[in-house]
Length: 198
Image (cartoon, rainbow, N blue to C red; front, side, top):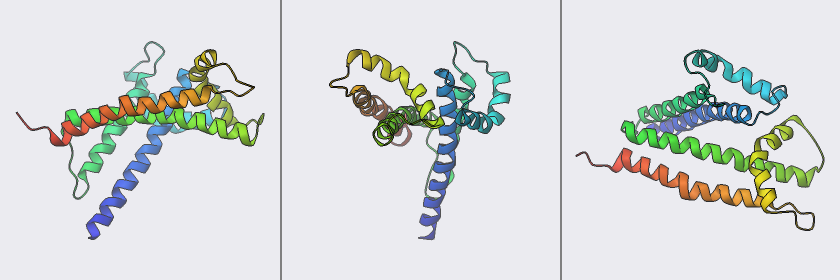
């Protein structure tokens, strides 16, 4: 009985600590990708927190095509580490490597989509509560989501002054979660736990 409590606490701690750091690395990666304001206090915080592992990695893995591949590798490595550590807990097991790679990929894709989902939702709520207000976080969220919202605004012009583009993007993001990310995750689970050895 006590093992269950310890196992649950272990799962929670591992998921929380790894999840927060992976989120930090992903936010830095995305903000670099959209060329957000580097001098924003939030950007500076993300850079300082993620520099220790990224600086040595960048000496080995250069950025190519405007993409920071060191950040991608770090996120993937952290996600794999999280899954392996969870597998070492009592009453758990480490899935076979092919399955764990697919599950890790699905987890990162899910986080990516959710970053955009929550960024848009936060912007919508702030625009209702404090229209025209500004703080460093809001500025970054606008820069992060603009590449998604701009094309949507071109397709869906405002109706009676109401911008419906965030709603359209949110619907598309939910569809991606359901039709792309969930099948990849289910495939990984099948490979990890249900595939029979040949």
